[in-house]
Image (cartoon, rainbow, N blue to C red; front, top):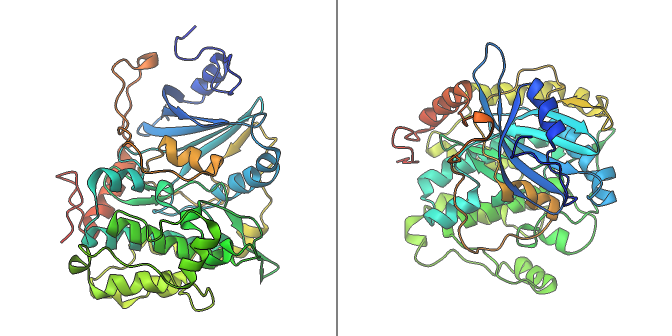
Length: 408
């Protein structure tokens, strides 16, 4: 038996030998385990297709027997339904979904640069010239979702991934949901995400409009990128809500001279405590701040948004994924996915399942190539994905030759 894939004895529901052999027949080869959560494990895998370049993927394996019942019956079906319908250059691409022996295997694009929190902890405050591009890409991903009447409900640095060519990808749809019914907005009653990213209306404990809360979380993410700290350090819910409502936050003193009035104004608009006065994602995308620096949608981003506007009703009414199916295709919409190399790190995958805050502790090491690859397989970058992602980087001014974002 392969030394990598032993039959599990710990009850966590990892990949068994029989699982690996079956998936190998479909072109999926498991290279190594990246990490695990309370009822999920993450593996680095390689997908081989005849006539196409090999693709490096991350596989999230969810053990339905160990997961909370509410997650399996409510949140997981929503996640599978949504990730099978979305396709955007700034959203992680789901390659395929399998259901086997009460385990769900979700194969997603993988990239080597980890998540945004790891990057900030490793590199420090992000230059505004770089943060501007990443914020714009993130806004376009959220705009696309909101057009489809989908709220992410867990936007945070751990769920924002950085591709090989330093493009932003929004990931982890464990709390996402459609937010309209028969054309009318649905208010959420579920507390989602991490405390530090939660909007005032969520902390208030009353039904809230999740699209509005997405924008608050986006504001927190932007603040963290620019300041390498959080706008609020309070962990008591009541006290935190009071600080939010009174706008008791400031940019770090040493950072202010490096920032433009445009970006500071935009963060203030997103961190407006009154959700009725808070900007929408369309307002943010159309803000003069981006226009001043010549940022606009690429052709693939326009295609994705146009598709969303044209098919949003049919996508929402489309038959939901049957979670009892053995094989669930990653794309049900019939349109081609927008390939881009995307990172899925252990923390960003498991954080949504555990629903816990990630503290700024020791910096985890970036994924490394294994010294000895299992099954004689070496991890390779998807050549098609890398080429398209590189083109997007260059169009936005990111220097991929030096392998670092050097926007001026």
